Length: 285
Ligand code: PRT
Ligand code: ZN
Image 1 (tube, rainbow, N blue to C red):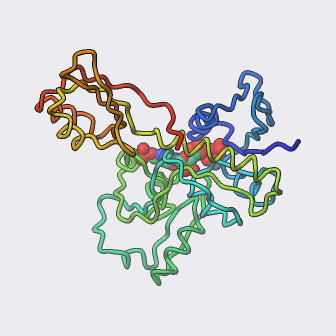
Image 2 (cartoon, rainbow, N blue to C red):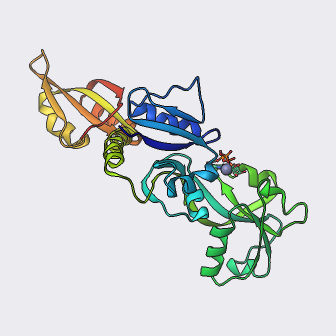
């Protein structure tokens, strides 16, 4: 039987969360003996550890069948891969920044300027679309210091908190793209690998559906059940169970993390008691 080969970043920002995805999908990978290629113990999948820059090409040419990498790398490299899913981690943006002492006047500011970046293709496409001529200086790292050493007038780089820009005296002036980790696949997989991928995606969906959600148990007087159900409608319909005390019922529901406190207060107001909130591991639809 064939294995589905997944390319993951060997070390760096995406490594741990990529492995978490496999782990949460019940796929065990032995990490202590981490080699370039490691086979799962309980699922027909093997992990190929690479630098993130190499993942799009490796997947595109079929050396790996699928991969997890930043959308920024996929867009920059331009290889033919299918984007199967946005994975909601590794979020960042690719932005243009200029020295904070400059007065920014809009995109035309960049006409004739020199911009340092490790993402020349994305930037070139952006400027072409906006009919701006500027000189793109490709550098591999430490892009943020280019203006202060006189190598460029501005930079185009990854930003997340913005701290790096601030500490280098730069101001973010245009967001060109938003990025996050994505699951990519080879353009053509054989039937066997396609079946393994389908099973993997099914597990992945279940894991991702549970993200940002909690399981809530609430005791409520019977005459308030209708009102309570309006506050916590849950996924299809919440579970309603009788309690030993015949005047009371229990509602079990799935709620969004963000709504948890607001809904708890609303429930308390109509007489709910003993609200339990549990973590939700998987949602299998
Ligand atoms: O060794 P390898 O080539 O595999 O790793 P790498 O050094 O190229 O990549 P790595 O691990 O730094 O990042 C991998 C991916 O994480 C990127 O391609 C993005 O998709 C994503 N990501 C998310 C980030 C950031 N957030 C991020 N903040 N990648 C880089 N940064 C850097 C950025 O370059 C800048 O220097 O962090 C700095 C800015 O951070 P703030 O918080 O100060 O704004
Ligand atoms: Zn890299």
